[in-house]
Length: 247
Image 1 (cartoon, rainbow, N blue to C red):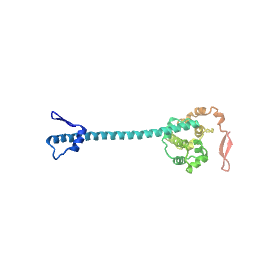
Image 2 (image 1 turned 90 degrees about the horizontal axis):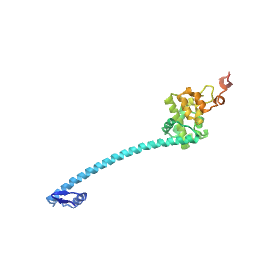
Image 3 (image 1 turned 30 degrees about the horizontal axis):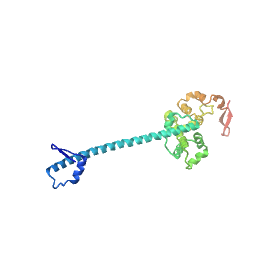
Image 4 (image 1 turned 135 degrees about the vertical axis):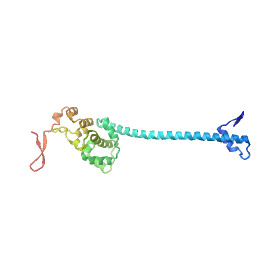
């Protein structure tokens, strides 16, 4: 209850509620009117304080929601990177962190990724080899079958690789570049290194083609013997491509 001590009225929240409920304002005396006046001012103060607290909570809630959204994006990126890491371990692929980052940004469906690879000039056979599946599997994806998460990650990595070498190293036609021998008389291509699990060498070759001998030494120390191409393509008299032994 409100207490009257030396004309100083001490008001509690309970006083406020009880008085507002029970006061007969039509027959109230001056002291009750004064008490009511004080209580109304107290109520206004309480409401103002509560409104400030609500606004503060709303601001905190907004910040929390924004933080959660940002964290969701981070988690999605980390999950994609984890999938890339697991795929790398499963196939023994050494995926540089730079390519992992670019791969994480590829969030399209299998259909969208396949369309992009087709527009880049990839054959379905090469797509299958680079993902690590058979060509019939890619054909089923094109008909609407869903790939596994690891297979989807494989498609995303190829798209990311193409975007990376285009934007960072100026390779205009990455699909053709991947099929081009790293040396004129060699059978080794950037795609062959990629399929063998040496994505790191593929990217290093894109960054510095002059280091090809060193890269080949890392890829296969016996490359000079194993991968030398003793034949070349020539056009015969009928205009048909044919193989002939190098001179």
